[in-house]
Length: 107
Length: 128
Image (cartoon, rainbow over all chains, first blue to last red; front, side, top):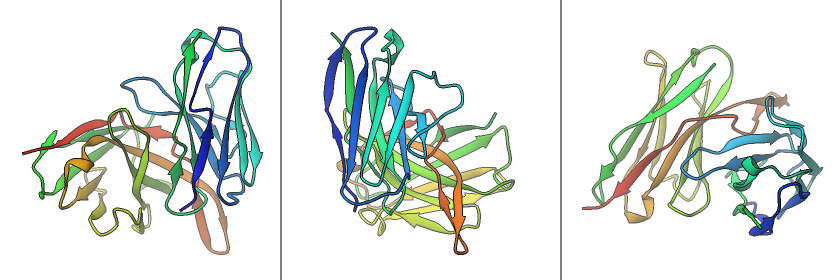
């Protein structure tokens, strides 16, 4: 299985901060990666697909970069509604695997 | 706007079979090429992909669950289903159904994108 190592596991940040989350794949996955936001009691919501394409309706402060084994999700200016847990998902090889999650908390 | 809704028993006894359905509304499962997945999340933990069924009827399962999982589709009901046999407490989780489109096709086979539409999830507890 491809291991997705997500870092950090949690972070504290203030409104307006720039935040970057990283996912590293144990082997190359091309750009077959999505980023998700999950709030308590809710289903994950896709933010980014194909590593860097912004999902329709998602604010432009979210961006994704990377290919191969290293990927980042950046929130350019953190907003109150962005406090949540974020997951990456690789769907290049079976089984699909998720990162362990990054909880973004209010400082 | 396509929506997904999971349904099924919230409590299953150990060693029995967990059965869930995902009803698709706002569009026909038969139109277009999609991957219909099941994903689960134990309380306070991360996400685990269980498997999917493609529009063609082909399936792909997580090897960690493959011996116990069956995903099927009933296009007449616009539903797809999950069966997980011989359940234990470790199968207690929120179960989500989700849809992926085709990201690209190459060499005669097509590759799924990341799931874009998810159901709200249904909690299943395995307990006697």
